[in-house]
Image (cartoon, rainbow, N blue to C red; front, side, top):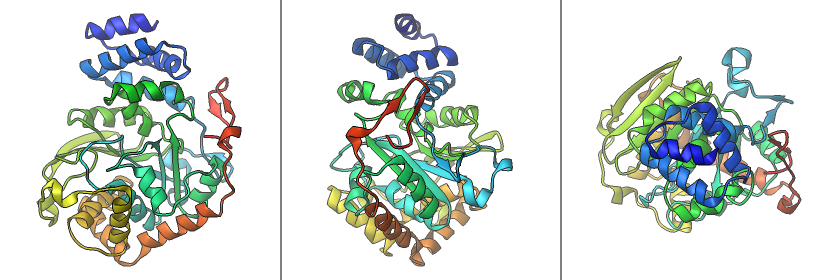
Length: 373
């Protein structure tokens, strides 16, 4: 099966959604030799992953993840059937290390958006990086990420933020963790991880690593029943809206996708070079994030305002990007973003120690237990 898939892709032929879902399922379940996994992932990257292929792969991963439960029932993606204010969750996610050495924009963005009262679920791999390492920065800020899923659910309910950053060696992705690390290039797994958010978020803001992917991923989100999404590729900053130049944006809203460019000067921001957004060590990045939430001004704050404003717009919390930017500034200046960080630190540090070795995975049903990663 995998050999046939490799042959098709090498010849430039795409896999349909069902073929890709079946192939990805076997890969995640550890039933495919590493050599064949690497060959297929590389061939897909060289050909360019299609909407069908990304959708099928995302479905396979989603089927093998637990689902967060809030108020004792599964989150419903249909906004007509749920309370918009209480249960719709916005996913703010990046797709991995982008190598640009900027500070952790998405970490600061998370607390600004949560300060609006909108609940956020972030899901990703815990990977150490001197310059980016989102999970490392969050931990350095004082957040305990090593808590059970049941505590993450309570955290979403009580604090409004859920952070699930498990090591690549844990969970259903553990079978391909070493292969992905050894390959050293972004693959389709970098695209499907954010799409498999276990909170089943209906609103998304997603960064991609190639400009040609913005509309493709927006179409995938629509295929997966997402309601609202901003998919972005920024000049010099890639996974975020950029202060360094043009950001290509594909906006999914009410089933329609609109693709356009965003320029920082359109919103009163000065265009800067990447050196103005430079981060550093984990300690330095944590200090930058804390400084922004505490009211520090400058290009880094502007970068967060631009991205948090976009997230609020994507979630329907603002009527426009400009309105989202202004609201983000108000949230920071009122201390609401910093207060969310402090609440999250307090909550996660009172959680019982999580026994990772005792976690149990139930692959037969395609679901993981609520007490495991």
